[in-house]
Each structure stands twice: as C-alpha cells, then as structure tokens.
Image (tube, rainbow, N blue to C red):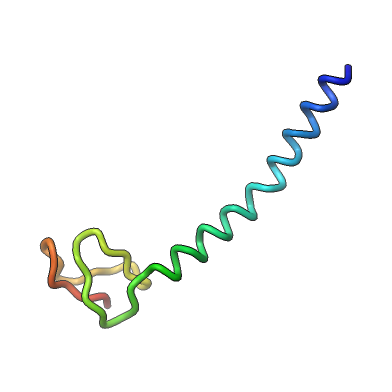
Length: 62
C-alpha cells in the first residue's frame, strides 16, 4: 500500500514539473534564434521561423 502511495506521489510531481521544463526550453530557443535581417544557413533558427534563400548558406532571416 505504501508503494502505491509513493508511486502516485512521484507521478504527480513529474506531471507538475513538465510545464516548467517546456517554458524554459522555449525561452532558451528564443535567445538562440537569429533576428530579422541577419544571415542564416540551412540549419539556422530564425526568430521569425523563415530563412529566405538559404541553399546551404547565404540566406537571411525575414
């Protein structure tokens, strides 16, 4: 019976902690994205989500 209670408590704590991790990862992504008008390559992450004209490199973020 104690095992079941401990298991439920651990699963509840995990469920409550997950949204906090997602918010932190989103803020890290925003800090690492390239701003509008900066150069980007194929695998670059633009804050706008669009890297225009990047065929390997020499693109720009819209």
